[in-house]
Length: 100
Image: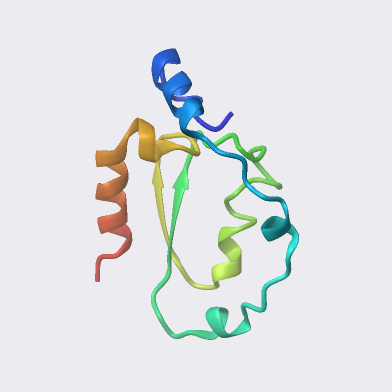
């Protein structure tokens, strides 16, 4: 589900590079009031084939992205690990997200 746009060889290679992630940082509450109040431009890159969370109401976008307030939405095809499957395309989208 994290790299559903890769061929089997790349998926296996990527899987071999993964390490366990501790659960506590996922459940710890952060005080982000100051972050959300910053008067800086914000962008959100949405990979349209990212299945790490279910699409729709519980997906990354718009549930997570809406927390940013006013933001630029940049979309691209790709999975959660698009950095492995399309690094050049992601780099272009990062540049697009930071324009202006």
